[in-house]
Image 1: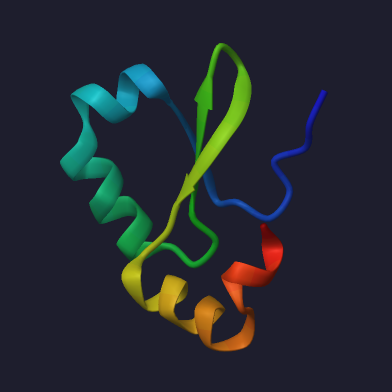
Image 2 (image 1 turned 180 degrees about the vertical axis):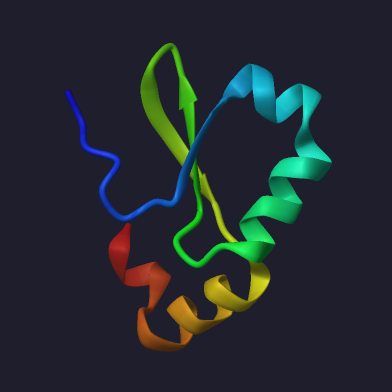
Amino acid sequence: MYTTEGVDAVATITELRSDTSDLVDQAQAIRNGVLIQKNNEPRAVLLSWDIYKAITEEVDLEELQ
């Protein structure tokens, strides 16, 4: 099992498909992002642009690969 610690909300792939605009608005309004699950497993995190830019200023994403 995984923890959702560090994210503010959880959504499924189905919800992402049907409620994309709402989830983008939610990601914009919250700080820690929306965890996207597929088959009850974490797959991605939807972040606001401002949070993404702040992260990339602190972390070189190329080093993570």
